[in-house]
Image (cartoon, rainbow, N blue to C red):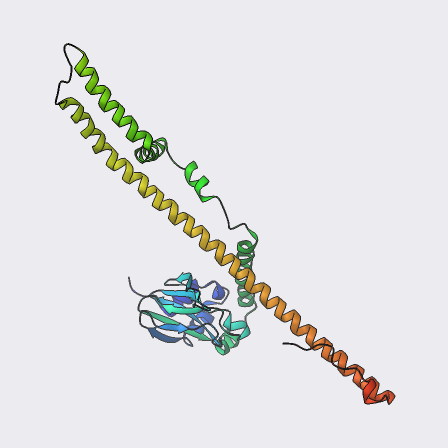
Length: 300
């Protein structure tokens, strides 16, 4: 598959759909081509953002780097025709995540200056940008507001067919003392019955009974493997749910921490302003230094 032309790529990006074709072509001429090898960082968390990227070919992984002993968290895979780092076009604040080339890729870089020069002039483009940002904000709010935890086992059990339930029941029975004791009793009962009657239907060495045991063993293997495969799928679903729960909690804690830090900073600024006002009032009234107010708050 041939890579897209930069103009065609911009037409697929929601942020630029409001631009006229001429404006898209003009903006495409300002894009700077960047090539990255697999495993190479596109940008790191904390870097000052001053540009966004469109994926012309290849794949890019968005992730949170390991911090404080925590493992790396992969957030999203950006494929051909998609974009990343668009928040840098609006605030020039540090990157909130890192980006790494998952495969050899070609990216088109759009600087904040070119974005403001070409896009902000168009009212339709501005509305398209606001619409796209609103959609992403709603998606984020939905993720944070909905309940991430769920009973994976219950949902998995409800989706099983009667054949799946039979295989699970057989696997469960094979791993129990009831099966062992039952098999021993059947074996002794079979032998005793053929020994007691005058014309045994399966005399020693019990060839027919051995045939039945062979069929039983042959059927047990596939049934147990099917049950193990379903258990592995159930474990993967549970792990995926745990990841979503942990990610949601991490985002919530990070948001709460930022809000607390902002509130604390605001309180410090207000208290410092109050102290300054009190000192000015005291100085204007000619109070001695010993009666002037002292600092009532000190940040750590």
